[in-house]
Image (tube, rainbow, N blue to C red):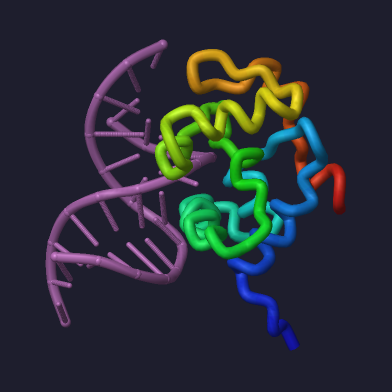
Length: 108
DNA sequence: ATTCTGACGATCT
DNA sequence: CAGATCGCCAGAA
């Protein structure tokens, strides 16, 4: 019996993101078997307000900090990432391809 | 009930 | 290559 909701899984995976690494909404969605529900992942993050979810480590598929407007201020998300050693240039993660943490490859 | 929007992404034109 | 459209699904007006 799956008592675990889609959103809960999102939080679960998000918490597993290693320090200094990032992933994408689509990657998480795909890992959960909802490849075309990337938007739901983003929506889940919105609910992650009360969770211990490092939402700043989740960006869109090209490494752009699309959700930075949902954090306090205008550069908190970028600040948090750079604090972990993730360089951000023009709202985009530098070496995203290298820092990308794929739950499919790391967890599966 | 209907329509629009939204931390996305793939596909089509 | 850029813009438009569709799919996914929840929430707000």
